[in-house]
Image: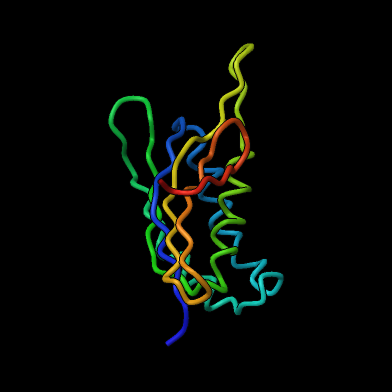
Length: 129
């Protein structure tokens, strides 16, 4: 059956950043070959994204959740790295998307449990407690 990695989490951002994030997600299948996957596979894994049309108050939340073949988990990570670098300047303040994603490998090559954190323009990785 193969090894799978469970990836689930959220991104919080200003309303004005939603469209640039959607564009990153839309364009990602164009780079499928670089990730050694077919465009169909990339589009399949993109179905894990949920981007609500409306939001409550000032923060817009986007979500991802899917069990991904471990070999292709880098495809989602690459999207998150690109999304993390998006920014918007408001006077002297630079705003970046923020978020957290739990990543659990099913253990085919040894169990791996990490958290990917989007913060200050970077995607950081930490071991889960």
